Length: 229
Image (cartoon, rainbow, N blue to C red; front, side, top):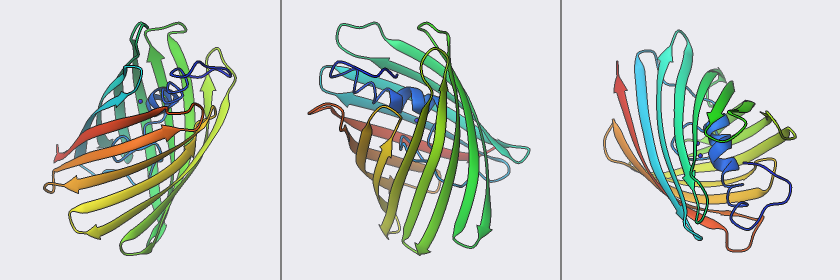
């Protein structure tokens, strides 16, 4: 979705929530602002547009816009992000992402996601990332996503990343999400809800927290639109 140093002041460790921003830019999670990606792609001829806002304490603010389309067997996406916190200059970034996924058998799939990001701060090219997502649906209403990957930073140590997410759909139009992930700097967790308004539109609301700093939590509100080209 949407950034790294070994020692960070409290909200820069929410900017390890910026590892959620730059890592989301480096490797944007499919399915809205969630940090853990799934092993699924848009279908041939399909596109989507995702937008979300994030708010946290110490005047943390983030905005994201991300269009994506299925192109020649791959999902091609763009990520446009803006991150700001009290007293600091806003950080803007733009990223390119390619995703490939396939089903191994009914209910089990895997994929590869590559991303690269440029930013308004130095260095202009923030880095690249490579991610392997696996998705398993043991029950009709329950899906488990696992991620392992690595972020390659331009002027900072590279970082491994990993995460797990549980999606539960008790009702046709309502979906709950629990996820826990490590972005190479700190551990985070999130609880979220998704309401499907129609086949084309859905709304996300979640609250996430980083374990790097006490009280470093943020809310996210997202809107997702799918359409045919």
